[in-house]
Image (cartoon, rainbow, N blue to C red):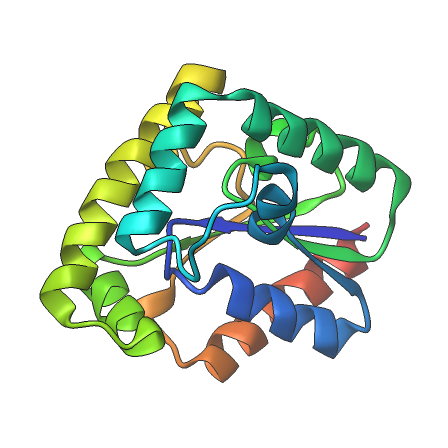
Amino acid sequence: MKIIISGLTASGKSTLAKGLSSALGMEYFSGSTKLREFMPPKEFEYWESQKGLDAIKFRLKHPKYDRLLDNFILKYVKTHDNIVLDSWVASWKVKDRDAIKIYLKVGLETRARRVSERDSIDYDSALRFMKEKDKLSSKIYFNLYKIKIGGEDLMPFDLVVNSSDFSIDELRDLCLGYIDKRKRAI
């Protein structure tokens, strides 16, 4: 089984993917972590910082790193079963009909609040970083693949959830219920 979790920054992708991975005894794979391995060393802790934004601007000028990541993910997903992947674009790129694709929606203000708490930065800075990151990331994926990542194109997804409506445990349990129904239907 392959499960792909997509959504914008601070939608809960990584947290949900790790929770599902643990609950289902499956491997967890982070697209963002792998991207940082492919890129030249960049000195930043969070993407939602000035150094993180500089790294995203670098990616916009050097799309080969995103292509490397996406090609790696496509090969990895083809050769691995029982994986939970969090990725911005894999849901559009992976054509495995049995893959379960989940999109997490959440408003900008909620995402900024989450980033503020997670990264220990003030809310206004988090909001500013989120707006800029969303704009730059959208350009990257539209330029590369003509994909609209901001929730405008939800065609590849089996389940779309507003993650701000649920605690992480409730979100995990909701998704586990959906996954169980899908497994039984196959």
